[in-house]
Length: 121
Picture (cartoon, rainbow, N blue to C red):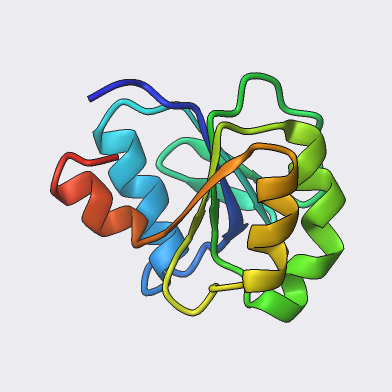
């Protein structure tokens, strides 16, 4: 499995949330993780930032925000210029798919946890 630096957008400190589980699983797979969420804290040694940071070398942005909440982050994600964006269940957003396609950023409608478990990440 390649080491694809990943930003978890919509990160949560709540261990019952899928974004939290994703951070843990990414760490378990030795993938460098950055996280952005509404509450500052740490999961698996990963600091959750509450301010948008100009991260470098982000390969994958994995979304845990509903389509309406994503709108505020369109330009930010595009500016990061990731190789791909993963739309986890509940985050599907055809409007944003179009914007990503226009600038040649790949996207997947998939579950990060499943991709990691099946070694397809």
